[in-house]
Image (cartoon, rainbow over all chains, first blue to last red; front, side):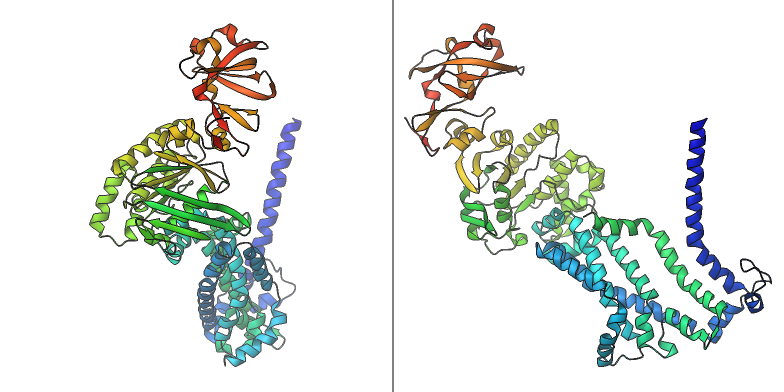
Length: 281
Length: 342
C-alpha cells in the first residue's frame, strides 16, 4: 500500500514538473498567438480577461504587418544576413577548428579557449570600435554591415564547437585516407566534413539563430527601414513614440520565431549530439 | 612490390627519442615483424615508413628511391591501423575502392580489383554493408582488403589482430600469412605479441627503447638471443638467468629437466639441485617454479612434458636433481651482451 502511494506520488510529481515546463516554454507562444489575433478594442480594454478572446478573433494585424509595413522585406533581410553569416562562419570555423584540433599540438587547446573567450566580450563594448570599421568599409546604414560584424561572435563559438568535435573523431580515419592517396585537404573534405555533419548542423543552427535574434549591432548600424532585419524592424517601426502596436508586434514575433522553433525541434537530437559530442571530448 | 631500407632513422618528440637509430633492411617480398614492448618506438617507426611522421634524421628508401620527403600518398605503401580506420560513411565496396579512386584508375578496373580483393578475403557478400554493421573479424578483413587492393609497394600492419578475440586471432594470423605469401608483398608487421611474431615472421626485429636489439629468423631469435633483453622478452616463460661471476648464464625452461630425463650426449650436461616450490599443470605442459641451490633469491622455471615426468621428481618442498645440456646454455656478459663462453 505504502509502495503504491510512493509510486503514485512519484508519477504525479514527475508529470507536474513536466507540465510546469510545458507551460513555461509554450506560454510565450500562446501569448504571441492570442495577442496577434485579438482586435485592438479587445487588447486595450483592461477589464477583459487577457487569456482568451472577448471579441471574435481577427487577422487584421497580420494584414497590416504585410501591407502597411516592410515586414516581408525585414524577413528577407534577416534570411539573407543569416545565410551569408552562416556561409562565412563555416568557411572560417571549419578549417580553424580542424587546425586547432589536429595541427598545433598542446598550444591548440589554450588557443581554442582563447578564441572562445572572445565570444564572451559583450557587443555593447564592441559596437563603438566596430562602427569605425563599418564606416571604413562604407557600409553605414546597410544590412551588409551586419554580414561583416556578426561573424565576430559566430566564428569564435563555432570554431570552439567544431574543435571539440574534431578532437573526438578518431584520427586513424584521416590517416588511412592520407595513406590511401589523399592530401590532408582531401582527407578533410572527403572524411572529416561528412563525418562531422551533426556538429556542422549544430553550428549552422546556432549561427542562424544568433544572427536572427541579434539586436544591439543592428540598432547601432542601421536606421533606414528597408535595410533592417526582422528583430530591429519589429521593435523600432512598430513602436511609434509611446504607442505600441501590440497586435502587429506579436504577429511579427510569432512569424519570426516559428522557423527557429521548428529547426530546433526537428534537429534537437543532432543538436545535442553536436554540443555534447564536443564537450565530453 | 619493393624492398624497404631504413638507414639510421632517428625520431625525437621534443626531448624524448622515440626511434633511436634504426637501420633495417626488409627484402622484397619478405615478412618482417617488429617486436617489442609497448612504447618501444615500433609504431613510430612504422608511421615513418608510411610517411605519417617525418624522421628527425636518417634515410628511408623504398624500391630504390629515397622517400624522405615524399608524401604518404606518393609512396605507394598501404597501412592497416590497429583500429582499422575504416571509413564509416562508406560501404565496404567504397572502402575497398577508395585507394584506387584516389589514383584515378578507370572505373571498370576498380570494380575488377575490388572483386578480386573481396573474393580473396571472403567478404564479397558484405560489399554493400557499412563498417558498423560488421563484426570485428569482418572489419579486420575489410581493412586488409583495402590495404591489398592496390598492390602496394609495401604492406604495413600495426597490431592488426589486437582487437580480435583469442580464437579469431589464431585464424586471422594464418589468413594474413597466407595472403601475404600468395601475393608476395613486402610486409612490415608491428606487434608486441611474440606468438604472432614467431608464427608469422620470416624475420623478426626485436626493438627496445627505440633501438633494434636483434634481427633474425624466429629460430635465431629464440635459440641464439643476442642479449639478455631478447632472451627474456621472447619466450613464455622467459629464459632463466643465473648471475655468475661477472655475467650470467641462461637456459630455456624447456631445457631444464629432471636429471634422469637427460642423456649426456656429446658436450655433456650441467647439473643443478632444484627445490620445487609450486607447479602449474596446463594440460600439454607443466610449469614448475622453484629455486636452484646457491641462488636462493631467484625464481627459476622449468617447462616439463607432463606425460614423461614422474610425480616424485617434482614433489614441492623437496630438492631434486635437475640438469641442462651444455649445448643449451647461453652466456651473457656484464652488459647483457651474448658471449661465447665464460
